[in-house]
Each structure stands twice: as C-alpha cells, then as structure tokens.
Image 1 (tube, rainbow, N blue to C red):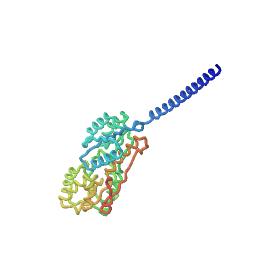
Image 2 (cartoon, rainbow, N blue to C red):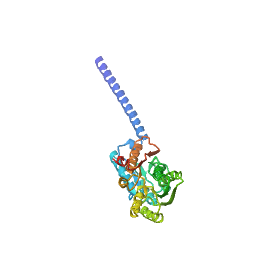
Image 3 (cartoon, rainbow, N blue to C red):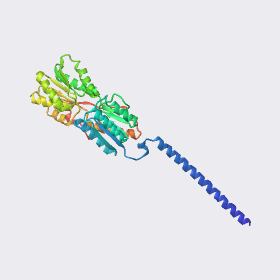
Image 4 (cartoon, rainbow, N blue to C red):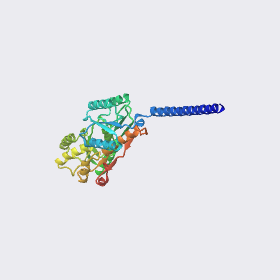
Amino acid sequence: MKRSKKLFALVLSAAMIAATAAGCSTGAATAESKSESKTAENASPAQSSNKQLVIGLSMNTQTNPFFVSVKEGAQKGAEELGAKLVVTDAQNDASTQMKDVENLITQKPDLIIIDPADSDAIVAAIQEANDAKIPVITIDRAAKGGDVVSHMGFNAIKAGGLEGQFIADTVKGKGNVVEIQGIMGTNVAQDRSKGFNDVIAKYPDIKKVATQSADFDRAKAMKVMENILQANKNIQAVYAANDEMALGCLEAIEAAGRTKDIVLVGNDCLDDTMKAIKEDKMKATINEPPYFLGKTAVQTAVKYLKGDKVEKSVILESTLVTKDNVDSIKTRD
C-alpha cells in the first residue's frame, strides 16, 4: 500500500514537471514568433521577402543614341542584380511620359526611374508616384518639383564651361563662334549653355555670331547649321550642347567643305563622336558615358530598396575628351 502511494506520487510529480516544461516551451515560441512578426512589420517589402524587385524605367526617348545607351546600362545593371526592368519610351513628348508613368504606377513596381522629357512637366507625374507611395529616382535631367529619393546626372555647367574654355584656348581668345542649344525646357540644356557662355564672356574678342536650338536632334542640327553657314562665312568654332547635334553640324560643315576651318565640339562621348575625334573631324567632347548613368541608376535603386542609405544627389564625373586622350576613354563594360 505504501509502495503504491509512493509510485503515484512519483508519477504525479513527473507529469507536473512535463507540463511546466511544455508551458515554458510554448511561451518561448510565442515570444519568438512575436519578435519575428515585429521585425517583418518594420521591414520594407524588399527586405521582408525574397521576391524579385521590379523597377520601372521611364525614358524620354529611344531615338537618340545617348538614351539608348542609358537603357542598355540600366538593363545590364538589372540583369546583374536579378531585378526586373520595365521600360517605356515617351518619344520626347512630355504628355506621353505622363501617361507612361501613370501606366507604370498601375503595375505597382518597387521603384520608378525617370529620365524627364521636360523638367517642369514631369513634376505632376512624380507627385502621382509619391501619392502611390512608389519611390522615384530621376536621372540626367532634374525635375523642378516632386519628392525624389535621388537624382543622378552630370554637372552640366561644368561641361559647358570645359567646352567653352577649350574653344577659347584653341582659337587663342579671338574669333566668331556659334552655339547650338538643346531642348531649353530641360535643366541640362540650360546649364550647358550657362557654363559655355560664362566662360566665353571672359574673352571680349570672341563674338557669338549665332545661337539657335536644335532640340538635341541630329537632323535638326544639320539643317540649322546649314542655314548658319550660309549666313556666316567667317566662323572659327561651333559648340553643340550634345554629340547628336555636333554630328549633325559635322554633316553640314563637311558638305560645305569647311571641316579644317571650324573647331567643332560636342558633349556626351558617343561612339560616333569618338570616331570623329580620332579622324580629326571633331576636336572635343565631354566624357559623360550614358551607359554608366543607366547602370548606376539601377544599382542605386536596388541599394535603396534593400534599406541602404543613398545620396540625395549623385554627380558623376565629367572630363574633356580630345585626340590626346580619346583612346583611353571607357564608355561601357
């Protein structure tokens, strides 16, 4: 009888110990579960899941080789980082770009990269993305409003100044020059013009005989240059605000048989320009390789979406390219 009571007590004690252990285990699991839930709640979607990142890329055009190269760089960056890139082409039309961004917003990407067709007109599109809680990065041309995570591009005032100084040095501070401007609704065109004119203004014996916009377009620049050449027989230098326009000017200058007489410079470091510099048909451009602009934009987007800090403004390096250093310039991977 005593043995039975003692056995019962042992069994009861073991059961109580097991129940207590089970209770402790359940409490620990619950606490751990709550901790994990809190972490997931505080994390961004990109941090709390392994889903593929989707990045929208709203391009202002895909007819200009510069922007084709921007897209190629972005695609390479997305490929290397395992992100999906959705690309649109506004065909240099601000209203089309507005619709493109709105369409991207409906697809709910993790982030949208925008290369504005117009610095003012793009503001409404950026604000719509802001309202939809979709972060925005702008590239090349800055927006005049809206909330952007980061803007990346080049120092356009510096670029224009480098070209202005190169022309002033080459013509020895004296002569007639022509300025072919880009789309003046963009900060890039405005700043490249400012940089150029700020330098030229320091040389009283340099006279601007013509200033005209060709909208960053090769065909338009060729026609504009043809008319300027007919009206001005004495021209020492031409500054074109991008390489596409410089190449259009080159066609007109070659047709007029004045290649050796005119110092022609551009901006952007396109492959055709590099070739023209090597052949001594153009004298200079600015190394602002679009491929790396696109690639850096995607890298920055992914960095931000993973929770890392990114700079509000990223200015990539600009350098003068002439026949002396053209062979050493790298424009892509």
